[in-house]
Length: 201
Image (cartoon, rainbow, N blue to C red; front, side, top):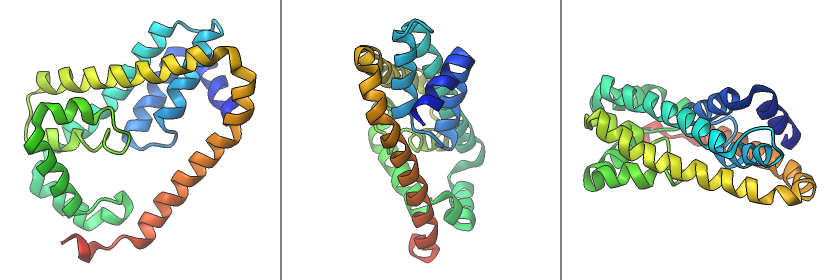
């Protein structure tokens, strides 16, 4: 997995990083905690520039956040809750969880978007209530963009600084990445299997 991600980043460059981060935000096949540090590795090896890596990752991540924001803004709270009620098992998202996210956003407003983009479990979800309450596009882009830029810069910078231990980290990270992806898949399947639509009401 380690070599596959690094190879993909090196072959596809900035566009590949942006697309991986876009996909990670819409439906996370590979977490950003793997994509961006490995992109930082590629930059440290001279394949890409660190600034370009950060900007590409941030652009893709912000684009993914905008997908959820636009969905929330278009559908509105009631329709999203009905959709979660019908398809919540596959989304692993219940109407009650939509309510909790919306309530959190209503209490903390722009700060929720800024800091929410720095929290792995909240990064994608926080964009949906921003759209549901019709947060202005410029405000959303400003705060979400700032949080996204900080997150991607932190991860890419960590990978860049560890380049000297590339081989050692690679030997450790390869089985670790497989374990993380496997655990994420099992976690999703568990959520699907144990999802209780009735409880969400």
